[in-house]
Amino acid sequence: MKRGDLETGTARDASAKQITGATLSFLAGLAALWLSLTIAGLVGLGHAHTELLASPSVRISIASVLALVICVLAIPLIVPWLVAFLPAYLFIPRKSILWKWWVCTLAGVIVGVLALWIDALVYSLLTDGPSFSINVPLLKSASIPAAVLGGAICFTAAIGARIFKAVSHSEANFCEGPLKRSQTA
Image (tube, rainbow, N blue to C red; front, side, top):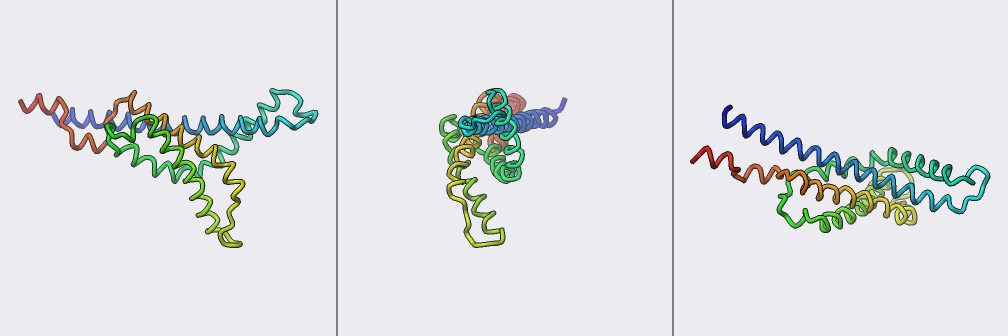
């Protein structure tokens, strides 16, 4: 096996670990969003006293289905921010303080809330009607699930980076691994 083949295989393995980590982070964020929306739905349905909602299992089922529908409908709003997340995930060096789980989670919470408000602002400017028509009470209540989504994605990314021990692309380009040193000696 040639030296170039080993380097390509190592780079391919690192890229596969990074893609796996990013995918798992996104799925964990969606699961956390679904769970937080289910809990919010249960709280909202807690005071509904009707014949249909008398059973706790029916309330849980309805809240879960509504949360799932909201998650699916929110994916077009999440995808642009996922595209912004990927370069940060791939190019920030793993030894950076941004990869500490508590820093990464806090940054994810802040970015999640900011992303929600920026999306609302952009979509309000793109629609017909009065300019700058933003539903502030709705955005305030939606900020909690947005913070949960951003925080869960970043928390999972930070923990996953530690577990997978994959290097970022910027580190892979600048570091000399043990394979290079042993072959040049």
